[in-house]
Image 1 (cartoon, rainbow, N blue to C red):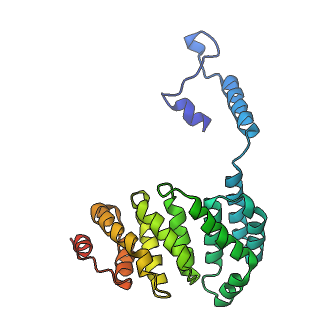
Image 2 (tube, rainbow, N blue to C red; image 1 turned 135 degrees about the horizontal axis):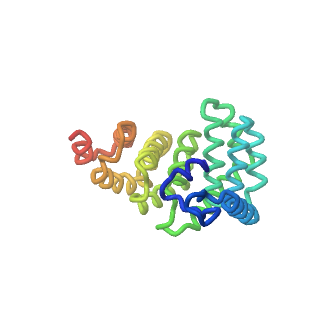
Image 3 (cartoon, one colour; image 1 turned 45 degrees about the vertical axis):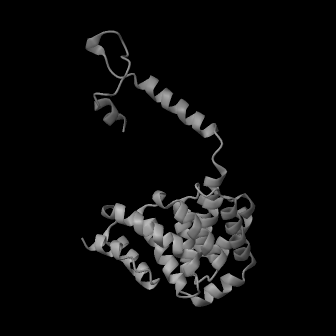
Length: 238
């Protein structure tokens, strides 16, 4: 890295001596400066919520759902919405292909506390400050776990509709897919009507930013949810 920086014409250095003939980078001074910066960074406290997210991911990487639940329980009181949705998302990924694991998870008191904490965190949000990735992850997790919680999807859908412009194509298509999938398990058409309407207008305007897979998910979601948006279909087909 240092050699690359030295060869870079934009790299500024102080000559070791004043003679242009013997001028060369002051390596000692540069190294001292970098060590000083590292020491200063090391002395700064790390973001506790970032640390919690790292712990959640590390617990998930072990493949042990009980370890992940124990980690979630240990940090639950300090978690922000990003931490809560990360824990929910990882638990859903762990239980995707195992109905017995899902049934056991629903009965687990830590999982119940986690869901309640997610609902409380969503209630505390201002309508224009909801993070798109968190909303998308919550919806995906609920659909993957077959979690028929109307109160949860109602809050997620309302916040998503208010913040649709902040969604990346993958986040929005995933959320619509999840809403449609949940709609096959319970009656939520009134809860999700706003997000489908707002999403249709948004996708029409931004269709060129949506890849094939995202558009396929969007079309599946609208069809499954019986939301027939002809202008959207024409725009995608154009």
